[in-house]
Length: 262
Image 1 (cartoon, rainbow, N blue to C red):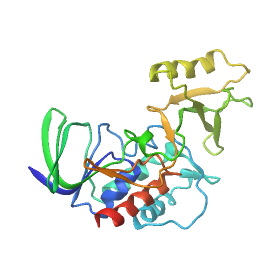
Image 2: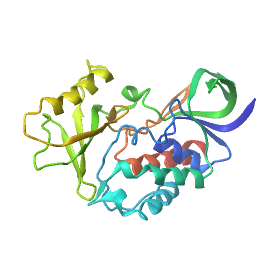
Image 3: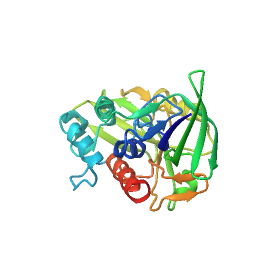
């Protein structure tokens, strides 16, 4: 049974930052197959104001991002441009990540956690001193206040009139000729129903918009804030998505490592 100092659930922005602090002693497991799905799979667009960045991991990642002007346009993060940058960062940090990993059981035994999971038809048994969940699983327990959710749509701007969606937020990217529309989520609706609703914006639009839907996000975009780390006998909870932006998520991850794992 392979042993680590820390097991991180979720290849989220916070999870990547935690692992970057101790690449050899940290294993990331993720049920999906994409880095930072909390921001990239949900196509989350955030303002990126100029500020002092806290933490070595976030500073390194930001330094790589700044080499590509299209990633940040007019202070707005172009999330669709950032995945190659993130991949290069993860590779340079030599992070250990198991994608397509389904957790079957997690058990606390004295001074360590034993995690059992299946990854691509292979059973894994791993142990670690620490376990931290950075996914959205416990977001409602961790959030301070309200959680807001949206289905984000990547739209090609073909004319002057945008597609109308009541109460939606629009993020413009002039250089790329597209925008991201955050369509508010009805909690009663399933993801397939939300995708159908998104398509109806284009077939039954209230304007003469010629804009084209390029892609609907693969998952719901979740926003909110978490001011304190939760912990119990099952480990720590640090929801990466409950951050101001992806750099803030990395800052929180590194601060968590200093406070609890260093």
